[in-house]
Length: 189
Ligand code: GLN
Image (cartoon, rainbow, N blue to C red; front, top):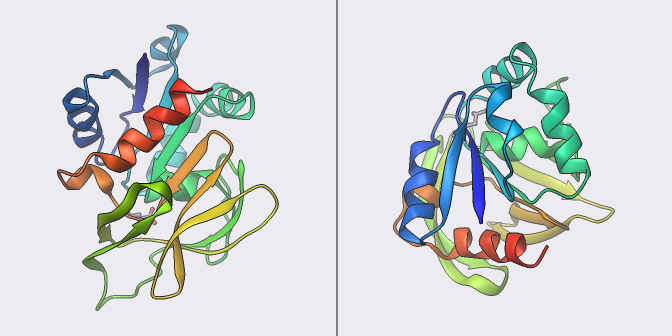
């Protein structure tokens, strides 16, 4: 199994370390050439969604990656990565891949709560640590998307088929369960 990690901007190194600790091979996607190889899953890290979106277009990675996701390539988006997958952003006119049936709100926790840590149940994983950094939350899911975790009544993780998205950064804690959850999606594809 090989996972491609989008490495244009943001917290991509931590995902690679997380996968390594699980014995899963990964490589960085920085240019078109990188996605000509075979891979089994894609991680879109946190960062700044506007910057990642711009770079994806400039580097001509946008259309091929969207095609892969639409064809069922397992994908895991964290924070800005979740924003990239959302069909609608309620406080931003941009839409990126738009492959998940959900509306998200960017920078949704305001200034005071810009960054915070909590623990909450996530799907079959049990209670997992959640680090939020200028995070979005999911205002609503519909269609094929299902909520996997909520914090204070706000959805912070969702799944739609082979697509997994979290508003928080599981790669910033030592708990590997959310990555294992994704690896299982890849394995069972
Ligand atoms: N605030 C960022 C955005 O809107 C997301 C923050 C993050 O990925 N940690 O894209």
